Length: 377
Image 1 (cartoon, rainbow, N blue to C red):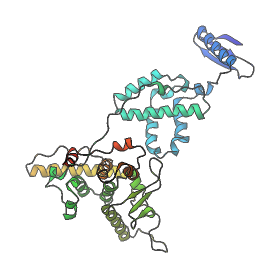
Image 2 (image 1 turned 30 degrees about the vertical axis):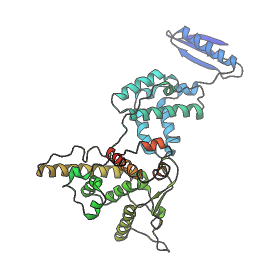
Image 3 (image 1 turned 120 degrees about the vertical axis):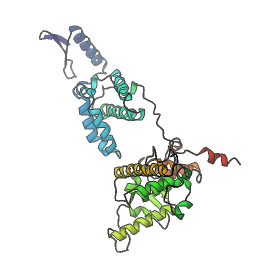
Image 4 (image 1 turned 180 degrees about the vertical axis):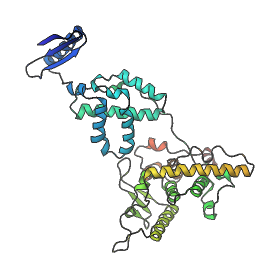
């Protein structure tokens, strides 16, 4: 039976006691709200569908995010990136609210606020994390009564798909200090040559060439170990990738040259340790973190662009606005995929790049119209 009693001059407390169920109580501002709540709880208990809401009402979004970070996110491959999203979500006003009080309208308002400051893809990643937090709370943390308000909200459509490819050498025919070997590799490598020249890191140039030759991800290159590189078979084995599936990457002659270069660098520095078979023990090929690769690349691109502008000024020539602008390290994977697509059919290319879905592969394949036109003749 339900009982309603007044608590102080402005509040009403409803209590529901029924055999076989724990006692339930809640305080409201009006007597009508208290009676409506008690009637709903009694009805659910009579029909056998009542589920406790106490934990969902007592746990704030902030607390749920902290638990999610500790129990779920920490076990993911992208834990570092997700930690940044969790930190952002914990700072919003909505994080102080109990999970059970958050409605779709609250999430929609938050989505609109984010869209005024961030790109749709960024907002979508944040909403996806919040949605997963609610689902985990409902499925694994004993909050069965909790519903996911993010599922009912319209999601922004990402419109920042990149199609950036390397600019041909004729855009900067006089600036790159290239040797005969580099000129043989084609005019489209001019940007990489300039970045390599401007880089102050001995590791960045070979890392860039390896990315351009193999379409490997930044994290895969940083984690690559000598024990997984077979120069004789010309294969690099990746035991742990972003999508959780191991794969073997074929190595071109230029990629083999990169590994030979890194061997010489290690041997000359005395950092290489050999076992009884005189083979390199398990160690990373490139002693650098993924985030450091990105920072080194960005600095090198900035220096290379400044050098290019200076040389164009001295030569009284208009600089190409595309050359060494809006270029990211991940664009090398786009470029490599587009080049490999002219050699391998789709089913073989997916094995090289590691894409499980051909539709995702198409996001990385950006053929030049002039190249397609040549095939018509």
